Length: 429
Ligand SMILES: Cc1ncc(COP(=O)(O)O)c(C=O)c1O
Image 1: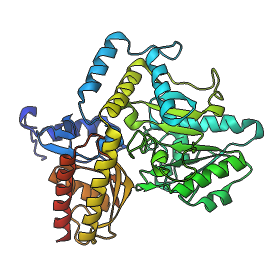
Image 2: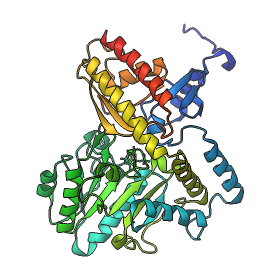
Image 3: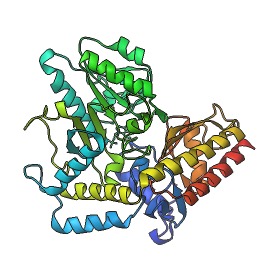
Image 4: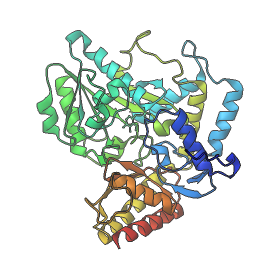
């Protein structure tokens, strides 16, 4: 006969197990989650339900630009929610207009559309491109291998990674992928149906690879020559993470011809709301009125609450000079991580990225890497770092991403480096 073991009362059971059980019974298991249940945070620190503290260098996947529980965000949420949370896009409201004005000032002449996520921002750009090419029967958008553009049906078709498409075929038509940072491959792939090119300024999920200046300038020329829209997915690499508002502005710093560079469309999300879910796209002036009344929309996009928070995030970034901090603290992290890669080449193979968007590429087949061998090296290293008290984000099977808050201090960066070195040294021993 089967033993009947009564569950201990909830109070004395491990809180983590209780929460995990809630998930396993009630939440669609579409995410591979780590064994951590977090309850609150402050700045760059997060606390789990058992009271343990972690230094967060993952920033909720590049979202928490000001860290956790920033008082300016809390206050903006409270004050705006007392006035107006939502009205729909049937009416005008000041915060959306002011946020669009701020984003236009930061990118260039054009207009903005507001959505609720990065995937939805990209969907808007896909529709902009289709509208642009419709009369000529052009609809195809070329993207790059290892890109990531979201989990919607068009998003997975646009994404240059087979793993997101598997079992969801047939794919939405009109997307093809070519190697990244390869101008000739892009030129060779153009067809009479091509209407746009979309790239990330720094590939994120694909392993943190910045575009080269030649690639950006070459794609701009190619798009001018062939009458294509040049679209940039800045969902992850934008919003000052690189040290400039847009990664292309950082990559093209001091490069002849770079001052006048502008893409035709830019999608944004993640750090835009600092944790409040929102997205946006910017369309360059000649194309900014293509999507006329009734052609595109979303109920919640650009609500007064979301836009007030986003304006506050921009204000704090400016007042506290966080773009400079992203550049300086990011470069400090990168140079110290590069030193670690020289010291422990059997564990760290390479370090890439700009500012607060860094990728630590692990060596292939690290000997004796602890953890479940059915898991990727990146997942196993991430688990070891969690045990040491540090949060990072895996990108693919072999890269760890650091996407910390833009206000990460030098001291916190040093603390993170110490924790990384302790784990890496242990693995290397
Ligand atoms: C470059 C890029 N584009 C699009 C997306 C999708 O954004 P969201 O998850 O907000 O839909 C992501 C998310 O990681 C991303 O990194």
